[in-house]
Image (cartoon, rainbow, N blue to C red):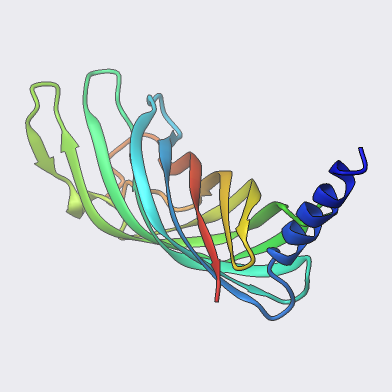
Length: 196
């Protein structure tokens, strides 16, 4: 036990040293698995991969502002075999609160704005239809997430989190559909955090 105590003390100290602190800026390349659909109407989930870079500025040891640039596939599948494939470049503007003794848990929340990069629909016979003119060019919504950071050294960590997003903008720009459709997404993500 006497040999274990100094090792545990060292690991705790090392882990605390790895936590970003007041006025620190971090940069985090991230990737994840998306499950998206439309709220409104009867749609199935579309699965995809997303990626991006997230940055944070620490206002205190427990609070940070979170933003970045992410490529977010959205869209949904219909019962008759069509799949809307929407691609957005998204900028989150979130508050992030860090919890726990070592501040390794976090909860983020706040608005997000997305700009349509491409929109296409794949039909049941694998035909591709351009629907850029039918989809709203800008999406705005609210996101929330929870995650955990793990130390890799004094200035580096890795993380896993789950993020959710609910859009407020009707994606049916021309009001062709009977119901309004808004984006909805849940994603599981991982990445590397570097303190600058």
